[in-house]
Image (tube, rainbow, N blue to C red; front, side, top):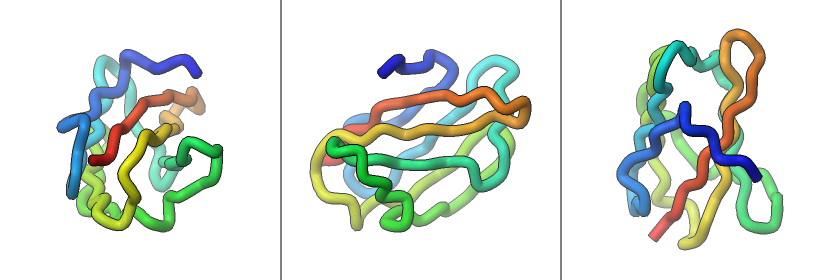
Length: 88
């Protein structure tokens, strides 16, 4: 998995809430975020979007189990970016 430098995930590790920011000219496509556990199972339904703008998404993650997750986000120009989140 190639982690994109265009995504800034903070805090990381996180326990209850996390913000994913787009860096540079990246703009998030609406509802394009997917979150996968270590086994490749999509767990996006366990996460609540608190706030979303074209440049940032804030997520509530208390329902995720502790572990490492992969976040995939599609941009408005159809590029896919990958980030890694550690849930405490």
